[in-house]
Image (cartoon, rainbow, N blue to C red; front, side, top):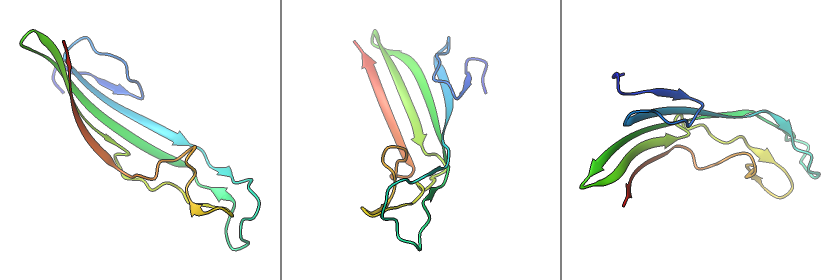
Length: 112
């Protein structure tokens, strides 16, 4: 990494220069599904889940306006959301998990 860069682990803090790299971890511990009606062949236990997000940002000036170029990935390792078995569906828990998998994104933000 260059002298003008920085690395943040688990923190979205700001750097003093124009480069930022952030690695963020999100963990949901295992828990029990307390909903009734779970078929006997299925478990009420829901597995723990860890995802990692990675983001790189570069700040610069364009014609007197500040700009930030950002590249990133959510759920970098493409972890599947743990399955939830209950009477309503065989799916995932939307309060705790995101089923979309890995999402790669880019953004340019200008401040006038």
